[in-house]
Length: 292
Length: 254
Image (tube, rainbow over all chains, first blue to last red; front, side, top):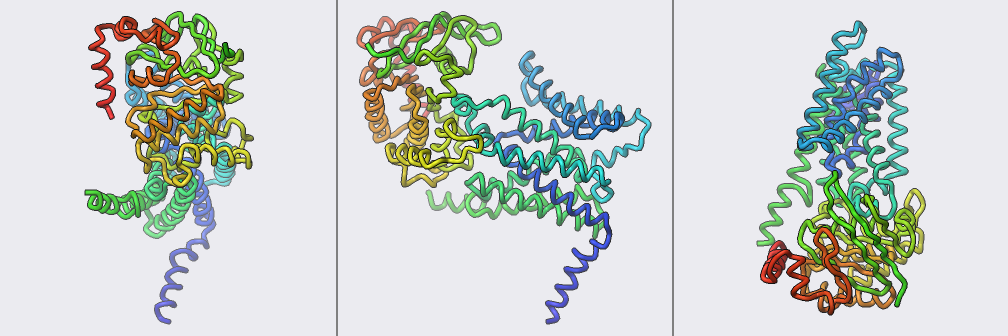
């Protein structure tokens, strides 16, 4: 009985008491939603090999966010323009010069990001750069919550409708084209969703770490499943779990929320990497013993 | 004379101003198995891309059953069976899912399989002997089974023109025999089958016609007339010894 009592009290202290603060209720709900959306998209990013692209786009949205702020329009619109713009720039430079793609990506996103930094520093405003770079979900405003919800709904509905086509696009774009699917449309759809979720992730973990939200849950789930649907469900569960727990942990230790969420995601990845039933390191080494 | 199914008229394709295929003209009839032979970079994949509509010729015109390529894609008339190297075998899909992808062109936007789709997929899998393996992740299949899985997808697509890229590379004897038997059946049913291959011995065994390609069409027509030592040395740009060497190398890769 003592143990149960101790457990219940501990649970209340850790998870219920913080909810007396309105900001904590908002923070937990928003990060759960962002975790859900980012991890749903992360499955496509992982399988398409777009981790670097995700990193690029999430950094490249910065000038768009600043300009949108100054013009007093939704940040998502500015981010969208610059996110997609950066990818068009990458494609253009790759096609017109002899420079390899990873170099072009590195070049373009740092250039956009630097432009964003200059804009932030020169514009007299209340924009807090650290909030954009590292997130500020504990202090999220109501208009930002509305924006996050809208982005989340758009992303989840699009993924739900185009799920099979996007899977085919990631798996075998040649076949997709040969049966008349518009792969250019699918490419830009995935890219647009990436830019939008980068803005949503910006609120919780910040521009620097949003790529982790868009990669890690998918990578972890990929080690745990051989079916795309299962992989998506596992990724979303991991995404929501680490976002919620990370937010609580950051509250209790008074540390960076984005940092806590991503560290937790990384720990989950390492655990999966070692212990995954089929694709983990231990299982793989047993496989080799059996084979030889 | 059967009906013309693949009609390539004076097609020139260029990438970034560099010509990859020059003034190619080919007419293939229904019920024909045709080999496509040439070195790497000779324009085999460019020709495939032109037939699938992935590249727009700078000159000339491609039509399938008299239809322009956009219509051809909409009607699922051309199926492509990729080389094994082109496929991500670790992708989390099972054999059944892959074959079902052959049916997407017939389904609604959400790609929800109807009973006809399920039935065709089942038949296709049974035909290649993979029905019992349908829930396996594709990477768990053997080399020959992998080929058969993608062949089943082409069957499920019910295209009348099949493009096969190196179909016999790295496959076991059982799969090779099964696939050749099936190609013969499809020929009977009026399919047009174009096979890109390094395996010159397979050309003489079952290809009715052959296309020799080296940046343009060097020769094409009935295998007995076209598949001569002289033509082959023109195709491979050297002595016949060179092409048997090329053949040995292509086998070594697997």
